Image (cartoon, rainbow, N blue to C red; front, top):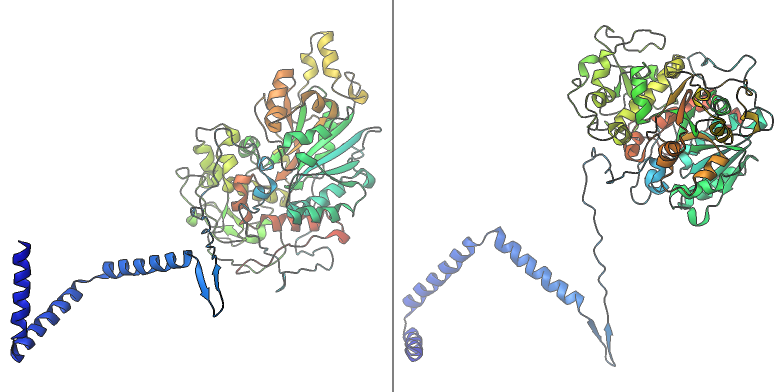
Length: 574
């Protein structure tokens, strides 16, 4: 067979040598036609594969040592090729932050401060709705002026005002990680310092972040006030929050644990909470009422403190940059634009733009007014069904309240916080005062039990009926369910008895109280605003809430020499 093929090949060559010009021309046209036909059969796939092959060959060439030649020597140079950067899978802009399983962190303080504020692992885009200049600078000349009358808030202080009991030592522990938040909190802390007629003898900033910018800022910041101190936590810094409590064990000292993202403190809140602690020695610890906390949010919803706020339906800012906190100045959200009631997911809200406000939903009977009156008494409870809180109430989900939609949803958080601003504007803080007096002394049955209960308080509050001051008028017993540990009052001796702590929130609010038979209670007259849980942070950061809390503090709390400025450049469109 091989010989036959060879002979055939030779015959073809011999025959080709005897062909004439016409035959050669015919053969050439046949070959050109074949080449043209082959070219037409090539498609993009073939060219793509050819390109890949060329790139592959070039990569092989670059990966191998390159030889540089000269007239006198040969030099071998090793060319390293860096590993390609690892890219995380992209997430949609409206995707909620993942919820760890099986036991999600209890609050934003349980994540590293870098994560809670969008550090290296989750860069946050901050901007301001204030009229900063092209370099991001803002210079308030004095306390901001407003066309609105000065805010007047009722006080629930006893006749003659609040007076700190003699001999009582109160230390505030600020779990610190975020300078933007603490810059606003500073005005409220100064307002409550004992040196200025308040109740706080010391303010200790427990540094729980390793972000250099935040640490350096705090070092300079604490030098401005003698009552402030910078507390190095050593190996505890960046670790679990339980180890911080080992520094709060002076027996007769009342410690107030305050998270760094408390954005508002009612002027009665700290004295009220301290007097309730004195009036009620039996509870293990007492918390302020948090605005933006799942448990109390549902109570506020039912007691009329939550209003029908929704994110601005516009896709870009419709007002100029300015320093304002009053929700009424933002105008209404017209009912025709509202989402359908009850049937949607409270997690489904997407920020319309950076620095957006939330607007009060106009009910069907409110007409077409372009302004929401701060004095109107009209209230549409039906409108709440169109809001995140209404959707949460209708669709609570399978989780416990502490880790359900009220913890995850930035929309539910925003609605609560704008409702608080609205209640402040209308001077109706009494809406938060649910609960009733609870006399735990009636439950003590024998002398041994009485002695154990009284041992948890200092001499000023040991004996029944010895304390005759205010406090304890509106209490809410958590019945050994978990509550958020953002703002509490607890005796040092009780902290020491519970050490060591691992999950401080669970143990202080539920586990230890149940073991001791000493409940964890909320004083609902002590109202404070909690800015965001870490799973809510990105959504809340897209609103103008931080700007509003700064504006409120500048107008009503901060001294003229301590006016606060924005940290960032102006949001796009303002």
